[in-house]
Length: 210
Image 1 (spheres, rainbow, N blue to C red):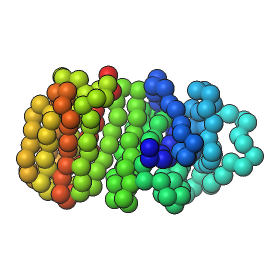
Image 2 (tube, rainbow, N blue to C red; image 1 turned 135 degrees about the horizontal axis):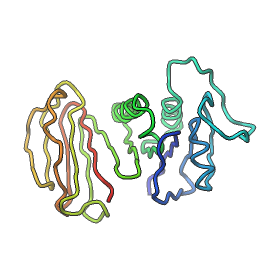
Image 3 (cartoon, rainbow, N blue to C red; image 1 turned 90 degrees about the horizontal axis):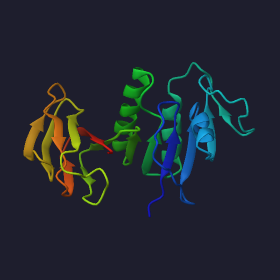
Image 4 (cartoon, one colour; image 1 turned 60 degrees about the vertical axis):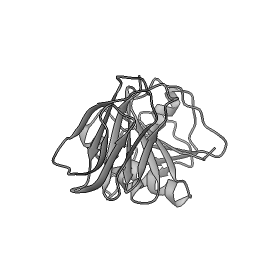
């Protein structure tokens, strides 16, 4: 099983059970420390400017950054995970709450995709994945791949080449998509293995978990 870098932020929390493997890296970004405390889990690394953390019991080795900085706490965590060699990321607490942070965290997925890694942003009800010039595979044996469940596809670059969708209700073969046209909203799972890809450009996939 591939090792995963888990990053926790201060956004809305998921009701889904989270389990770590020994080789996984767990990073609490600022208020993500409270998230982990609330669900009884611990971080390997705690970092941030701590302007949104509520706990007064931060670990002694927490890494503190100034509030005025170029990168968000979540971006610092992503860069650290990449530096440590992780190529698969699961991000919790990165959606909901402040809309600007939500948009910024979706941009983080694009950053990961353009740096040879893959990330998933988890909300309580849905998840988001991004790929740059490649494919996203959503297996048929997952709980969310149920006929009629929503799966939307978005062009995130100005021009996405050769967009192809198979296994969803509305299939697409080799189209050019643009980020000012929401062509892929409200597609649906069919219970079959779904593959969403493009040859050049960045596409995002949002799917509901239940």
